[in-house]
Length: 162
Ligand SMILES: Cc1cc2nc3c(=O)[nH]c(=O)nc-3n(C[C@H](O)[C@H](O)[C@H](O)COP(=O)(O)O)c2cc1C
Image 1 (tube, helix red, strand yellow):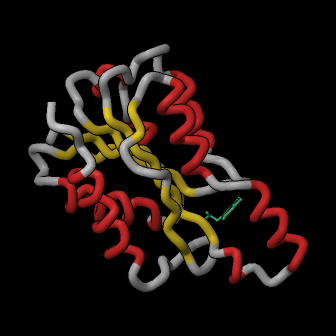
Image 2 (image 1 turned 90 degrees about the vertical axis):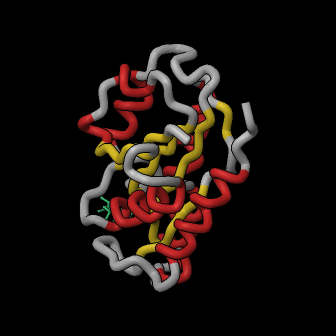
């Protein structure tokens, strides 16, 4: 499957998740890995699957991810299968009750990435997913890399044969 995983990462956690997803989808010839700041829109041509991931920052994708998503031409993802993920703090780990409430209601990056990908013509093949870090700089919770691999495998399985 010709796939591209586009991600942003400040402290390396989202990058680790992106790599785990990439490995589970296919080999290097099939699956490209790219930091969001390095992507040119013509790289989206000829793909079968596009996966976009970002750290959640103030309930949203990172600024670079938002710029990338907003810049995709209208219907630029037509015919492309898409999926979205983020990394985030586990609500249970937030000490302040008020902050817990705000984070819970504010939402996370993956959902808005998925919404944008669909708006640009993509076909969402899996629900958006979040992977948990223990603190803002990480590390990832135990088992999250394995969960990322499973999610990647599910993406391949959900692909509709052409
Ligand atoms: C400025 C800032 C804002 C953040 N906002 C949120 C947030 O709204 N919700 C959340 O769950 N985590 C939030 N976090 C935690 C990040 O999601 C966490 O730093 C990220 O998952 C780490 O991924 P990275 O190592 O790839 O940068 C924030 C972190 C920073 C530094």
